[in-house]
Amino acid sequence: MSALRTAVVTGGGRGLGRAYAIALAAAGHAVIVNDLGDGPADAVVAEIEAAGGTALVSRHDVTDFAATAELVELAVERFGGLDVVVANAGILRDRTLAAMAESEWDDVIAVHLKGTFTIAHHAAAHWRARSKAGDAVDGRLITTTSASGLYGNIGQSNYAAAKAGIAGFTLVAAQELRPYGVSVNCVAPSALTRLTEAPLLRYEGAITDRRREELDPNWVARVVAWLCGPGARDVTGQVFDIRGPRVGIASGWRLEPAFTQPDDLDELDQALRSAIAAAPPAADMEGQRNG
Image 1 (cartoon, rainbow, N blue to C red):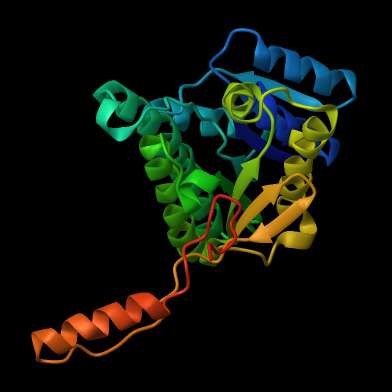
Image 2: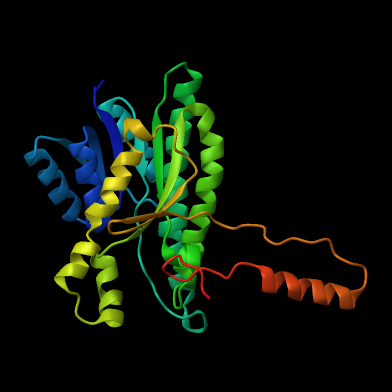
């Protein structure tokens, strides 16, 4: 059995996933780099091994329930167990709601939402079995939401639905897995990657060197590595909005204000309008309150 802690990073061949895999390897994890592509995961594994780390390629499809079971089994067979899962795999199929094709909806939901569930399910079953067998489990599950899922963004109803679902999934998983010694947290990363560069170019034009530095995936990887380290064992059920060096805690829905419905419908109308006027304004894409 390996003395190293073992981590699986889905979508680990490029961008954020690559940064996570390298950071976790540098922190002493044996890393299984999961990516469907033929070359990217191999390059990340080679980079980790050249730096003296331990890594392995996985091409399991996270949308396939049986395939992710095999991925967890691979960790157990090769390294003796599984300690960390970073569910990072994702795609974009941006289009406005009226123009979106069914396949564009299904593909995004499958990779992001189902892909998070499948690997998390099999990892959770592994951790539960170990806990019930008397092992001291110190597991970490890191999921991935987005500013779009937390605050909304035009043209991303599919992506936002999946990412909002993942944030809710994280809150439940954190409650369910705590008794087994597993912490569950979520990151909402803003970073310049192959996935995000084209949309940013449309909105910002040329991307400056300063902007590239601000949106370097390594800023996010630092937080993810901390969440997977010994100092964060007691941190669970949190959503971290990470935009370069700036980190915020996304606190989610709040029930404010609240009132008891009056019997009279005219009074109900007035009460609803008063509550709406008193409610805090929705956050913008920067996570700040509008108005």
